[in-house]
Length: 243
Image (cartoon, rainbow, N blue to C red; front, top):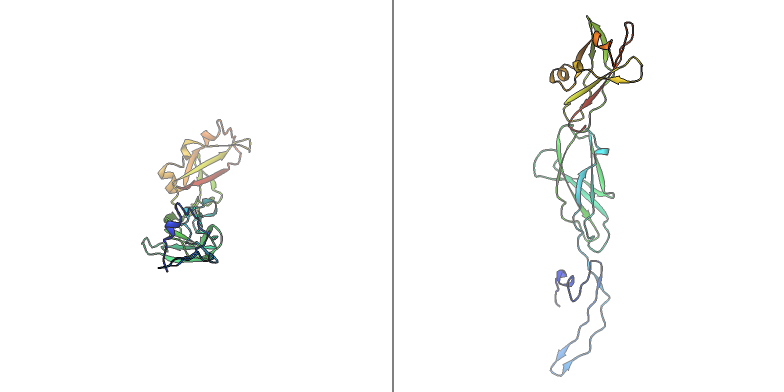
């Protein structure tokens, strides 16, 4: 018997690729000379584990503060037989290098993890598996369980002396703190909206208090052009690090 490293069969003069059948013939020699070669064997398929997945990333269009969806690409070579499925491992959001299997027999190049804790960072790794066995791990990726904030509920407008007071409730931040608000006031045409410096939602004081006041005198001028007796409507949008 003899053994040949598969790596040797991958280069010249053999230049075989994964999945090729390996054939051999044997001749025997004694003091009288060498026999003719045997018939070739039935063939053994040259197989190995697939290359590790790569480009592991967060699919932000399918993620939120409570769900993380990861996607990846197959490695360059499947090891000579198609990839059957994938194994997803993670650190359970513990911030350690200890990984546990989150899911096996995943048949798509994506996986959604539900019921994650908003604001917590999770680290993932993925393996491909073919008939020969599982690949090495992909590079790990750390993903914050977060997404753009939920829309705020409708704000409340009220009269406060010679001002209009606008107040609102902070929406769910989806795991990333709200950094600013955008407050728009409806113009007298009941179609368009405009903003005013007195309701600048990037101001930390206004952001923290979740309220601002607009002098009535401002609302009587352009671009608002309201008159006494008009209803004042406002709308609010929240922003965090994700948008």
